Image 1 (cartoon, rainbow, N blue to C red):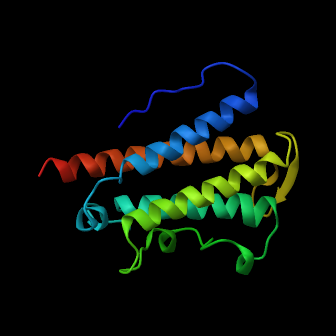
Image 2 (cartoon, rainbow, N blue to C red):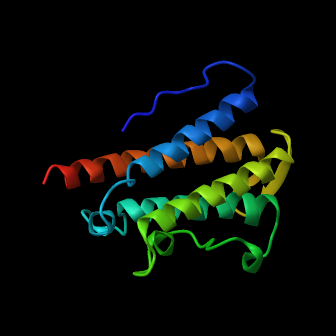
Length: 161
């Protein structure tokens, strides 16, 4: 599902933030409106499901903005921060609207955290070395765009049945 950009000019930060928000919406839109059964259906061999993609995106928000930028202990983050397959696992008692709301809350918190830093502020990542806020934005823009593409394909498969 293609979402047209709303912001196409302006300062770099405004464009980065608008693109992040556009890709956040795109991830959500791939799952919004699906039945609970369809949202959880595994159509590929990996753990990837429409609802799992949204849950994974919420984890990425918390991992980069709360855990990394703010250096919060995992116990003080607003939810799971474990990457990889566990980040795609959705408990049976979690609903699609709840998982979407969790991602939206994580995104709102990320916006608040990012507002306190400049694009050139740097942190040391244990694997990547020196990174700045600009890099975090670009990394998540890429990640969310890729996952929105995955979600588009899954949704197409689900609606084609």
